[in-house]
Image (cartoon, rainbow, N blue to C red):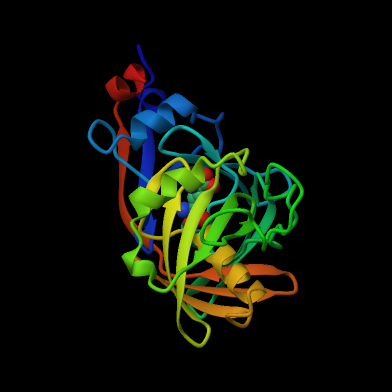
Length: 276
Ligand SMILES: N[C@H](CCC[C@H](N)C(=O)O)C(=O)O
């Protein structure tokens, strides 16, 4: 007889400022997520749909490990909003106000301060080989239209400063930049406008996913780029299509905060899993 606890797979749906996630908790058993499962679950008609899938695994030198997948089945080295959501979940489960999270980019610290979840996304990567770019150049002087700034946050970002981010045709502009040969691992693509002192309006085209309502690592990259261009200080408020994110670039790394929402818990059926 089949073991139903193994043939079914529990998951949670969460979002952070409208950036939505399916979260699979594989602690206490072997990892379940493959590129094929990510693509099947990521199908908004035949699966559940998500901007990223996050899999929680047991940590060796951290409270948890966390892996991220895009809906095209590719891996993401960083995902700020999913990290905030999972940190909220794990802190509640452990009854603590701080947790350590190992991701592809390294060990991250998350804390709850005055009710808000803050994640230290680490130091920005500001040399061409870290982003990565195809050849040696300054990250603030890319030979591309719109004069974007390249910033790595564990994943690549190309940040464009424009007069009105709200007017940018993301579907028209994003894919060409994502696939430009200057970015050997493709790139996430941000458009931002200064709307007040230390205040930006930002929209995003995500590598491997497309238009999303928010992007935490993108917000961090945009705040870093804005400071490098002399547009803002190191503490920045960003208004994205799905809500407001806060970024604080400190000596110990780029801290990110914003809203976290639990949507529902459910299970994938055996038949769905067998068809993957
Ligand atoms: N939404 C995520 C970023 C996903 C990045 C992913 N699309 C990639 O391939 O790097 C965030 O909140 O940081």
